[in-house]
Length: 213
Image 1 (cartoon, one colour):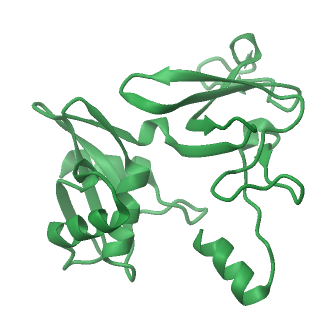
Image 2: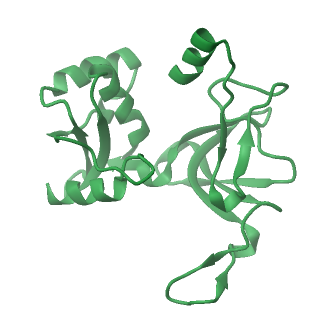
């Protein structure tokens, strides 16, 4: 939203969001000049079939799988060298929980792996991080989970803001209309977040840090 707003106001250009991955060569959906809806990644490409599978505990949207001519033929796995393993019946699971509206526009709700089950309720970590960004806009924040015998999981927030408090997060959550469950149970100050070579947050390493915390 911020990027779209800045592009429009500062440079006079209209930024359109799309969605894809290498496995889809690489586009699944995209907003176009004739079919554009803010907050979505546009409609799926022509020729793609889609299905949404319900995810226990997640009442909004479903896990998106796609099938079509631009979906990869399969993976070569390390334990079976030289053997191509195709998606079952041609369906590839994106790993994303999405909504598709009546006009076919796709809205991404989050990675299915980035949901935490807390006291029987599913909470998207994609909601947790914007709370921290609002409470402390000048720093970096990333959320992950830690196993908890009583609650199922806890949300941990790693932050470069050593002064960030739960009170500040609670205030930000109220401003955003986010549930209190989306407020991190533990706040862990770090000098910097682990990053991949692409510059994105390394959530695998972050998860390992959470389990060791």
